Amino acid sequence: MNFMPLSKNHQKWIRRLHQKKYRQEEKAFIAEGRNALEAATRMNLHSVKEIVIDKNHEGFIEKYFSHHRISYNESIYTCSKKEMESISTEETPQGVLLICDRTELSFEKLEEKSDTTLVYMEKISDPGNLGTIMRTAAWFGIKQIILGPLCVDPFNTKVVRSTAGAIFSMEIYCSVNPERLFQFAQKKRYTMIAAIPEGGTPINLWRKKRKNIIMLGHETDGLSGEIIEKADQRISIPGHGSVESLNMAIAAAIILHEIAGK
Amino acid sequence: MNFMPLSKNHQKWIRRLHQKKYRQEEKAFIAEGRNALEAATRMNLHSVKEIVIDKNHEGFIEKYFSHHRISYNESIYTCSKKEMESISTEETPQGVLLICDRTELSFEKLEEKSDTTLVYMEKISDPGNLGTIMRTAAWFGIKQIILGPLCVDPFNTKVVRSTAGAIFSMEIYCSVNPERLFQFAQKKRYTMIAAIPEGGTPINLWRKKRKNIIMLGHETDGLSGEIIEKADQRISIPGHGSVESLNMAIAAAIILHEIAGK
Image 1 (spheres, chains in turn red, brown):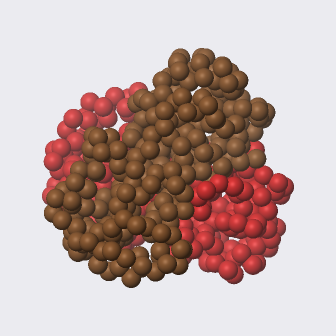
Image 2 (image 1 turned 135 degrees about the vertical axis):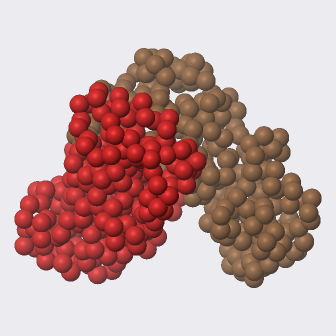
Image 3 (image 1 turned 30 degrees about the horizontal axis):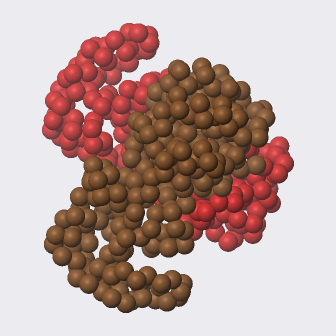
């Protein structure tokens, strides 16, 4: 394998990718750790542009590529542990950092070929929640998610980490406003399902339709009134306990389990 | 209301409660924010020993108690914003901090009176996961949880925060080893259900028994082999996607929904 030292300028460029603005400009994002490497090389949605490892991981990376019989013709950059700490997005860097192509798909592409279950997130603001929901969606076989214009950046490093690799298998359609989504749903005969905290059809009594778009709202504000009103159906998770609400990612998981998992 | 200044020594004592050792010694824990105040005064499992507010919250606290017609005869301590930052466990303190009685119940008490659904967590290590699971359990009406000796401290400040108030409604039985749990289950005729990542009965095909103990394992290691073997039933969440596993708190939520929520 071809190991190259990581220059200071290169390090600076990587640190810039911690910020949304530069991730968008450079059409790139950072993923870290062995699991990310495994997911990124197994799936091919966002291709790996660069691999950076600290000196301790040279043996690991050689073994990894020969064992999995993956060819990787680009250079692999090496740096010191201290330099890795300066470019890593994690408190305790794992020693393996990837720069990947940020592949955002245009909504037209979804119109050509869409699956039977889609998830629309209007305005998720917590990166951990978005990542966890993507991971859960991937577990239940969902391959396409649609994000509203006010969602946190799906290539935010905390999102990427929480997806546990799912980011590499998920088609992401960004900045889709509700109007456009409803037009699409009507044309393609999707049932639009709004998840609301209470007052909707209890999820366990809800009867699955053939083609569904599950719509999830903001952590505290929920879905906008317009979406709730225009939705074909409204669902809720029945509870009878002593807390006011479920965590957002938890509620999403129960809904995904009922709609996509069965 | 009687407002008292918070002395330096008192601040030092509160900061000590950030540590497990002192929480155990002092039989106390910290909860923060208006929601915690609301939950703590509405339920009475862990009584409020002290309330500390920053100067900006004097009006709020007077209104709160008069509006809810709650009598609180202890002193309320006030401090500066800076002092609040020094005693708070949060990055952005909310200005309201409670010191509560850490009420741990002895397992004998559970033997006297136990509900039909119990949750046993053998070795959860992430505070956010434990807190989120407690919040979800509370949502589904579960009031008693049992923790193994290797679990993270349930009165850890991150756990308390993640419970979103559920800590105040949940009977917690700590340091219960598996042998003791199985003896109890046999005597009280509980069905012992081990949640395992794969190979168990698919949770949606599983048929609910009258009295159940749901057993959850460690985030990466799962349940110990001994527990899995001795369990009456083993359940898993079917998935067919591209990720290796579900987040621990997510898996727990889907199981709780199927077993306690329906």
